[in-house]
Length: 135
Image (tube, rainbow, N blue to C red):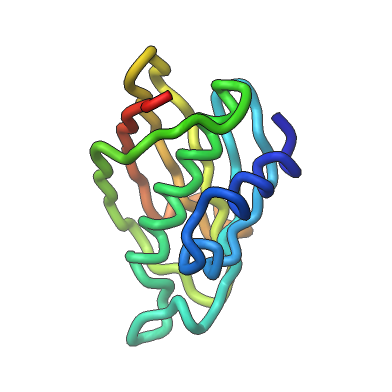
């Protein structure tokens, strides 16, 4: 799968409010994907940091792209579980969302997601996700 195909999945399969996050696929591979969540003051919470809700939605959405890449294209799937830990605020910069598929089974996929402020080496948040593969 290519980044362009990943961006087409974002356009074709996600709700308008998710598309409104402005996510773009930077990189895809056999068992991983990297998406960019652009900074927007509309996604900031009181105090100016990017909201946890935006970060969690980005992690969830990026997992779909990583699974699609691992499977060779989009298949119907749904989130079963997501756990997110926030480690530091993101202020005024884009977020890189890196997903690594840790197990890809016939009916379930497991992923590890690291969200990092662009230009930083330290994670802003970490998530684990589990998806049910429906097709």
